[in-house]
Image (cartoon, rainbow, N blue to C red):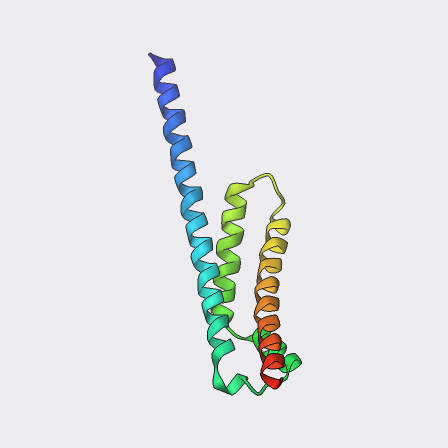
Length: 119
């Protein structure tokens, strides 16, 4: 009987942990989407269309601070739950790399769009 109770408790705990990880994953995805949507709004602003590539790059690095931080925090939380044995610094590096890639993608699109418009 004790073995059955212990097994049931283990299964229940495993399901709860899996649910927590899935919830953290959903929050990280939501944070990513919020950050991307904010960057996209900056991309489409009329006031930014006349910027040079380097100016737009600097601008993008400074916009959406709350969305960027939310994405960083939720991604680090998810990674810490998904990979608890990995150093927290590695999770922070991964989150910072994801943010840098998002910024790079939006800047690349901006530069290509401006180059095409000049032709």
